[in-house]
Structures are given as C-alpha cells and as structure tokens.
Amino acid sequence: MREFMTLTKALSDPNRVRMLLALRPGELCVCQITELFGLATSTVSKHLSILNQAGLIRSRKTERWVYYRLADKPAPVAVREALDWVRKSLAKTDEAAADAKRLKRIMKMDLAEVCRRRCRC
Image (cartoon, rainbow, N blue to C red; front, side, top):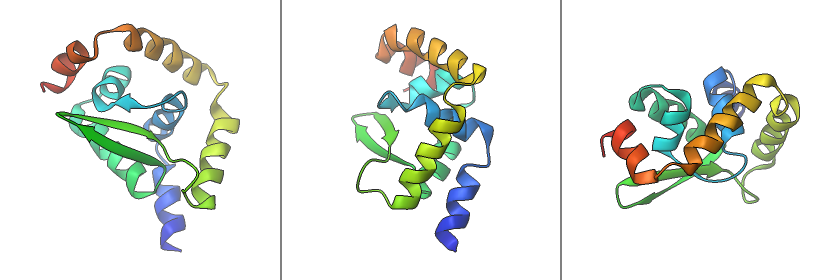
C-alpha cells in the first residue's frame, strides 16, 4: 500500500508529470529542468526528490551537476506501467508539445552557462 501511495502522490502534481514527460527523450541536468519550468531550484529539487522516492526517476552526480533520467527496466512493474500510462495519456497534449519545443532550445544552449545562470553552481 505504501508504494502505491508514494507513486500516486508523485503523479498528483502537474509539474512533476511534466518533468516525467520532459525526461522521455533522455537524461537532463537539474539546471536544464529548472530552466525549462522557470521554477526555483529548491522547488524543482523537491519535485525531483518526490519522483525519485517513487522510483519514477534515477539520478547520477557528475562533479557539481546532478542528472536525472526515467527509471528503466529494473524498475518495478508498477513504475514502468505508470510511466507508460503518463506517456500514452499526455505525450500529445499542447502543454507537452510546448515543453518539448522549449526543451529543444535549452538543449542547444551551453550546459555550463545554463547551470551558472539557473543554479548558481
């Protein structure tokens, strides 16, 4: 029951669901995610922490930067099914398309510059 509640809590916030959709193409630095959503770094970190606790995302740290990606095959079935459900339900929405367009521009930017500007790293 606890795992189910953690998963549903993670999916109950629109910003967290949008973050999951943004991570579909691949790994992103927390600075890129912060740039995409225009939220405070602390807010983005809290959302990412909740997604991580639910097992929906994984992280890795390289030097000063933390990168996030969607959970993959070793993830529990419920997590993989939840990610698939989010993708099938929302990937073609106008909001997801707008986020993807913004993310494409962000991905062309110098990562160090994005991180310096957004995260003050």
